[in-house]
Image 1 (cartoon, one colour):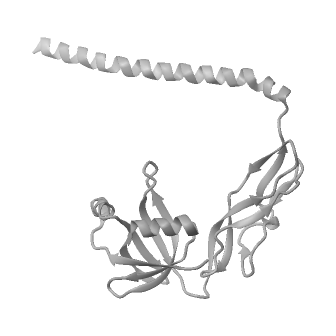
Image 2 (cartoon, one colour):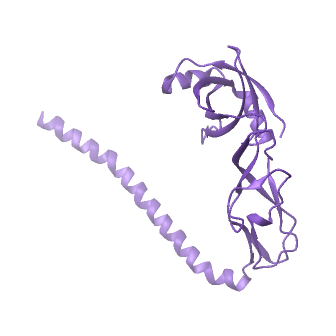
Image 3 (cartoon, one colour):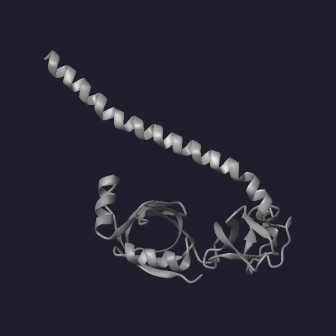
Length: 229
């Protein structure tokens, strides 16, 4: 994976308030650490960082140039996102060196089509591998072409680029091919589905009824308090 050059600024404000101000300024709070060095707090340009992650994935390699003259090569170690806005809240960046081996989780993509009337169960979407810090693959591939029901694809079946090694048990299941349910089987489960839906609807009704009663009860208490006063 090619590295992406990105500028950064030293960050002197910390805590939730400082992080919010950093994000309002269009930047992502981040920290650089590793190799026994003192952690360095920086702010990254949000748009450039987001574009690099969208293109290269969570293991994108960054060549960071801080305005104080610091230069660093780093990989994202942990990325925090806002679940609603889907924006980046904070990033931990691990310092790496060229030629250094790192262990990272890489997404697995299934290629090909399994046999007719089958379903694919994804057991693991990522695999832990060891690779050169500057040559971490953005994804791995495993073929399910023509796979019949009962076939299981394991970590050992995944094609690995040169220089990349598994860091987990090769027997770890990645995907399992199962037989698709027949129309009769689906029909047999229909009563259970309907019953579950009715139970869920009843629970929602109870919660709604309770919420409607709460303000009324509160109002009655306030009225009683005024009367006593």
